[in-house]
Length: 72
Image (cartoon, rainbow, N blue to C red; front, side, top):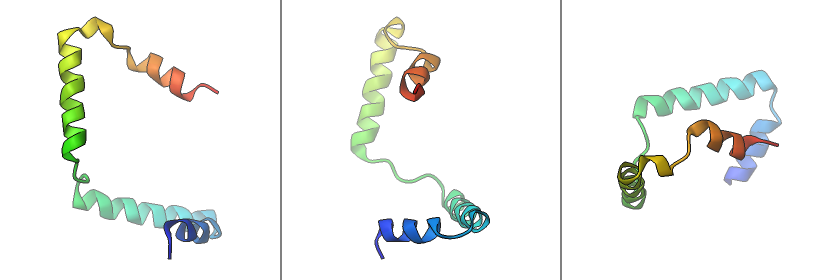
């Protein structure tokens, strides 16, 4: 079964069951801990952190970024 097929099957279920399934999956994942982070993503985090500390006034506050991303 593909991811799309599985999602379609889950969406056909009653909302209460969808929430129960989602909760069970999230609980299981929480026990396993965070997913592994690729070396590429780690390098990007380091690059951004270094850029921030080299000029902290150059970045944007989260509120501004959030507003730009989620305004509709």
